[in-house]
Length: 162
Image 1 (spheres, helix red, strand yellow):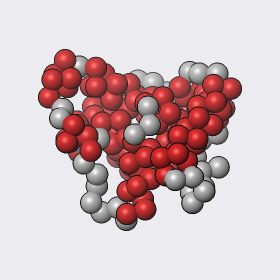
Image 2: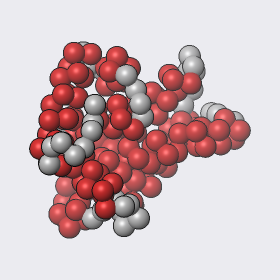
Image 3: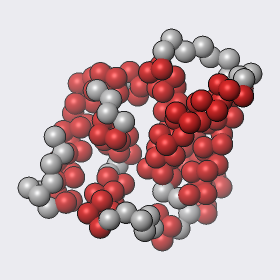
Image 4: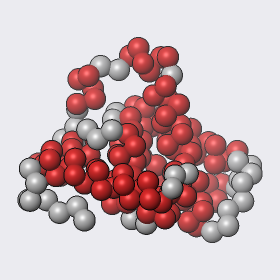
């Protein structure tokens, strides 16, 4: 079990990342909070020793993604989410950002993960391949395809994603 000081440091350092990942996957605040608590509880109870800060961050990302996938696969979840909840967007975002967020959220899951890690967390394709356990060329292919989909959704030339 980890010390209170270690846990507080991890929460301060990784809470935004965990919350954003949850919102991208789950698209609602209640489930995001549940998974947030689950991820940090796993951290508290974990005895994993990390090689460095990047290894620790990658662990948080992987655990968060897995917890989100588990929730989405659960029987309860598949019977209770309405389409209206999925389409709700945060009201505090400016219109342009909301449009981009909607476009990213409408991508299939495998593209959404790669776009998030590349653009929001600023990981390289090689780092993403290690985190997701995929070939680096697969990551490049997913990025290329997701950029094309985003251009089509957002009207092409007005947006830069490269």
